[in-house]
Image (cartoon, rainbow, N blue to C red; front, side, top):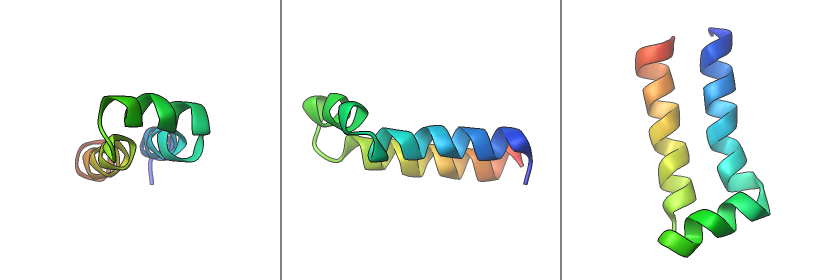
Length: 49
């Protein structure tokens, strides 16, 4: 797996794992952090690897 792919997926994971980022996303819409993480992982797999 390309380092860019790993880094991009890790950033998406951070939005779910970090309480501060999770709160920011959930303030906009419940479940947004998980949705963003899934979207970032799909993009990374499709376009960055």
